[in-house]
Image 1 (spheres, rainbow, N blue to C red):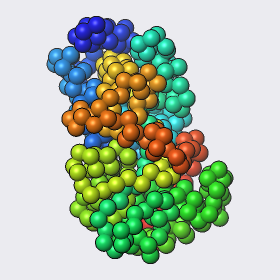
Image 2 (image 1 turned 120 degrees about the horizontal axis):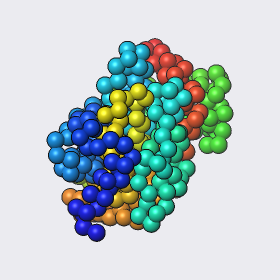
Image 3 (image 1 turned 90 degrees about the horizontal axis):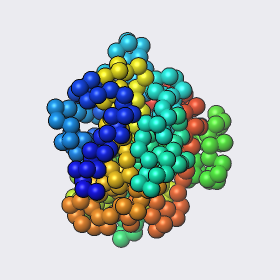
Length: 370
């Protein structure tokens, strides 16, 4: 089947799911994502192709995914939902769904099956962590480090706990300005067994233990809020070691050829995907549904992996992952799920964070202000 015929078939399926003719659908969408290399991969893999096959339709990006929960709460309160489709992490999808701010969907009714006929729900499998969540990628939050730090005497960090070792690896670090991952790493590096981390973190004493460990490096940390911050800080030499999403580090290492390497130890696996805000007008919802059928099909999720080193969420997409669209290098070895990179992973607990996020956000911000 030619590309044109494939796109036409996909569009026809989407039209069926949307329930309205193309003339009755909204001709613009506001898509919310994270900016940087990840958003560029979305634009290249499926937004630009979709707009090309739908003349007159426009898409505007809003880079506010990090604040999606708070902003959707405010929009709902005001009765004015200005976003059409929002990219969020799995834990935020669970929160938004529980609060009625995201629309529940039937994945098999809304989304395209795999090329062999496997239903969407079976193709995405366990990555559907909420009835409101449409998975896109498996990514990890991990560390990058400068490879030219003279003060390290030729050594390189190979253990996540090296982040807390200011004597062997002096220099500024960058960590995300939120409790997620930081508290888990702190407990791991304070002697808590991996399988006990969330049980310990549930207690007041465990939270105090994690913050006490973070206190040991607090004065040597620059706190980031955007995924592009750490790569830029590393490239500029403002930090020697920092956390961010593995795809952002791939970009600074492979695309920008900076003296930076990956520290995969205790990388935290996570999911990213779409939610549809609850309460969209019919014409906007129909456009979103039409777009989603195309943007989340097997080929489009595989295409996204040509632009960034995140694993596609569909099982049927994985065999289609090939080379980088511009560099020509094989992408599979750069995925967080590659066996050479996944020797010691930490599994993020989505439901736990959905329950505890608000309280620990407040406690984390209070700790930062001390």
